[in-house]
View 1 (cartoon, one colour):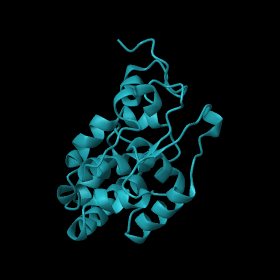
View 2 (cartoon, helix red, strand yellow; view 1 turned 180 degrees about the horizontal axis):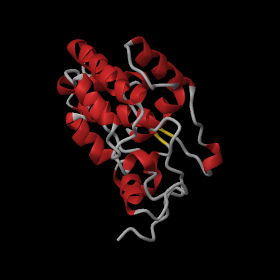
View 3 (cartoon, helix red, strand yellow; view 1 turned 90 degrees about the vertical axis):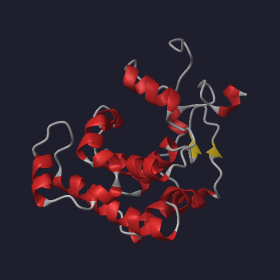
View 4 (cartoon, helix red, strand yellow; view 1 turned 135 degrees about the vertical axis):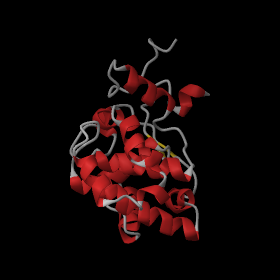
Length: 190
């Protein structure tokens, strides 16, 4: 039972958030399709809280063919219009269109190299383990997230600013920003 384990202070008592923090956030993810989904969802977060998107993740999967990029790029105007009426997701046309655009960019990259390699090469294929004592020390963007943002934009991705990219890097384990007091920090696991 993990109810009394020390966690990062951003975690609420919401079960969905606890599960996400304990089993996903900061864990190394090198699966290209999973990374594509995560990047798209991080983009949906723009201007909102992550829990807002996290609670809609299942609906996003249902609406966007479980983030199968080959299916997403075939979405019709009728499907897009239908998504604009779907209260289970964020009904922002630019954000919906961004998933479709990002699917096109993802498929183009996958022809040349794995999307995972495309992303992970920015950190030399090794996670950056930070040792923050307090949330006030955790940045919202870094030089590396700016580099990743530029790289993704150059490849045609949208909703991938440096702040979104840093949140993505934290989420997929490229950067481990669990506080040193959190039971998920690598020093606590050893």
